[in-house]
Image 1 (cartoon, rainbow, N blue to C red):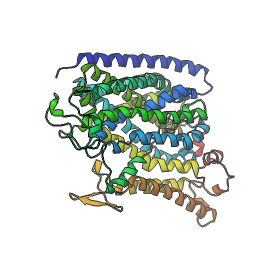
Image 2: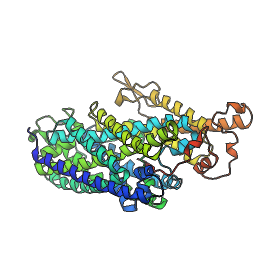
Image 3: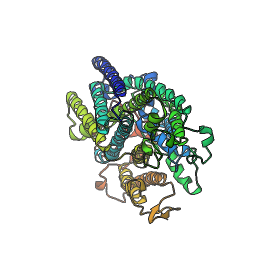
Image 4: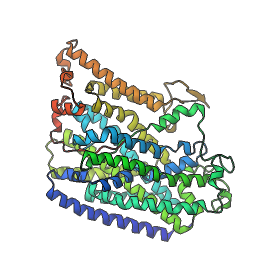
Length: 548
């Protein structure tokens, strides 16, 4: 197969359009810096907290409807052992948006945090919060890799462009316009990207449904014809695992860049509806792929699953079941989806490192100009790190699950505790973090070769390997949450009752339970809980990464 010149030209035009938009947004950011009452860092990371409802909806939705979302859903629907019933990303992301709007967006926007790690730094102090930053950084780097991998695989199949070139060029474009304008560039390019995603994906669907080599997807939904039914099945011993996957939650720093708490909440609710709608095309594409007699196509006699290429089923379906110009349009949708998620992840991890690590721990006296350079360097480093990971795996679904696992089992219980339980303190946070991490490792994860050491009810031995059938992630999350609360309460009792000398109270939690009733975050801000809570004197605000 020769290089698809027309496709390459189309992608180049799209990248130029995105870069031009990013440059115009950077110009707007410069104007905002001159009129902003905050500092330049707030303008770069939060868009001066001036992201209105419409732009917020576009950028929130585009952040999560990335290459990993589109390719992952298609791969799940097509894979015989999974099917539609396991393609949970659209549903649980929608649920996470709703939960984020109901419980998280308002308190975090009202407290004007700058990053998701701010409540930890205020409540726990620098030392413990620094360790909590690591899983947050890893989560976003995994997300960058996941989105870039999806685009690289697609361009390799449809354009016959080398995987390394596809990934590196796309990564470079995202890094450049994120460097130019920060959140303004990300938000305004997201508008173009989301429009392209919607138009391109839905334009491809009719051609796929009407192609001559595929059976009617309504007939193959429950019948074992060319392929196992694409709806899939939920066996009794897999119910707990399905519940576990469904409940996966994650975060994204975006809603609190909104103009108000109300706008932040509305953004979450509308995005919850849109993400479900955008989940339909990849489901249909996966269903068509499962209903296709691949022997009748130029692909050959063995199906993508039989060749071990199920992770590339979306680009393969576009390539062999649609006209060439339609497959090129499909490339545009995936490229747009990848850009919209990559830039957001770059900005998220950069904000956490630059403010929570560099500014508050390493260089408290750092000037505004110095912080600008730290942000730029961080964007480049994270982009390179995420790009590098794509060369070690070819499963988009695997990277997505790993990132979501980290968010759900380690970060989610900590966030719930510091926001909603005033008893929470650094002692409980430290023990919960350590114990939760150990428990999650002992429970194992076969997808990454981590053996099962601690067997939960229903654990079985298959081909010499222990396989968990229980909801291990949810168990780990709840275990961590209970541990945080239990040891936080224990620490308060030990120090307030004089059972341990006050000089041992390194986190200064004595008499913390005497604080007047009120929101946990508000109390922590007032009494500066944590041994080094003075580090947060310059908190201007944060966006929450809406529950994934």
